[in-house]
Amino acid sequence: MLLIFRFIYVVVFSILVCIFGSIYCLFSPRNPKHVATFGHLFGGLAPIFGLKVEKRIPAEAAHYGNCIYIANHQNNYDMVTAANVVQPRTVTVGKKSLLWIPFFGPLYWVTGNLLIDRDNRAKAHGTISQVVEQMKKKDVSIWMFPEGTRSRGRGLMPFKTGAFHAAIAAGVPIVPICVSNTSNKIKLNRWNNGQVIIEMLPPIDTTQYGKERMRELVEHCHHIMGVKIAELDAEVAIREAELKKR
Image (cartoon, rainbow, N blue to C red; front, top):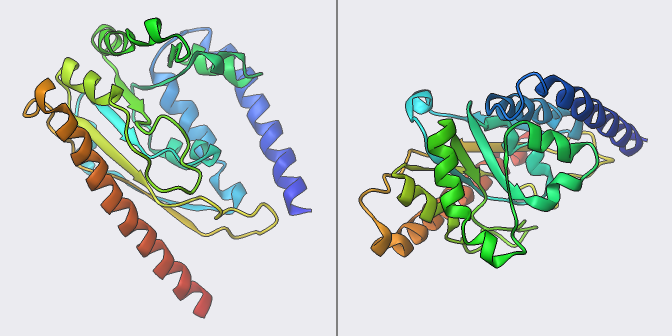
C-alpha cells in the first residue's frame, strides 16, 4: 500500500511540477536561476521516499564564484538527494536524448541546462568548448557527473576527463560533492529508509595543474571523493545502528 501511495504521489507531483514549471519558465526561458529552484523542489521528495537528507554546505560556498561541481552518480534517486544542494546559477550537462522524456525533458531544457550529443563523437568533441563558452557567456557554474553513468552499487566508478578539461580551460576551481550510498537502501514498501549525507568539499584550484597534469587532477579528485564517501557511509551506518538499538 505504501509503495502505491508513493508511486502515485511522486508521479502526480512530478508531472505537475514539469507542466507548470515549463509554463513558468517561459517568462524567462533558459534562465540559469531556474535549475536550483526546481532541483530543490524535486529534492523535497526525499521525505516521501523515507529518506532523511543532511546537507553539509560550507558557509563560504556562496563566495566560490563560477566553478565546476562534480558529484558521484549512483541512480535515479540522485534527483531527490543530490538535487538538494544545487547552488544558484548552476546548470547541468545532460544527454540530448533527455529532451524527449515526457514532461521532464522540456523542463530540463527550458530551465537552462546544457544538452550534448554523446552519440556523435564529432559533436561531443566540442562539448568542452561549449561548456567553457556557456560559463563565460551566461556567468554560470556547471554541475557534472564525471563517472559518466550511474554506478548502481559498484562504488565510485573511474572518472571521464571532460569536467576536468573544462575546468582547466575555463580557469575555474572544481568543487567535489559527495553523497553517501543510496544503492539498495530504499525499499518503497518501507516507511523509514534511513539517512543520506551530502557534503560539499573545499574547492580545488585547477590553475596549479594545467593540461599537462590533468590526469593527476582527475586522480586526486577521485581519491578524495572516494575517501569522503567511505567516511560518510561509515557515519550513516553508525547512526542507523544506534537508532535500531533504541
